[in-house]
Image 1 (cartoon, rainbow, N blue to C red):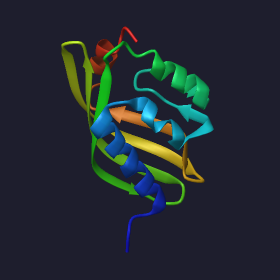
Image 2 (image 1 turned 45 degrees about the vertical axis):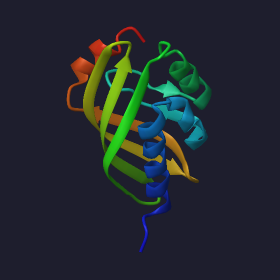
Image 3 (image 1 turned 90 degrees about the vertical axis):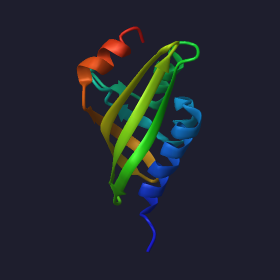
Length: 128
């Protein structure tokens, strides 16, 4: 028996991020009304367009790659354990997260992430 279709979608997203580091490559996996909870942010980003604008504001040459260690899911949720590597210029940050996605019709409708070191992440991305 194969993985649930939502698990396959999340695994494909991880492969894209691992190979390209281009978060914009994930746009087709987002619902138009997605709610995106960023690590360390009090308020979520609401809507696909607002999230894409946020992502497009990354500094030139910045990238985030993600390697999923495990992915589980069902009709409504997917949870991934991820090691992410963020690069900006000559600086690099490796961190681990648990990514939780609420899914509907094959799209991410809401996302939460919990990290091993929120303070380090906030300091690294402080200029974004």
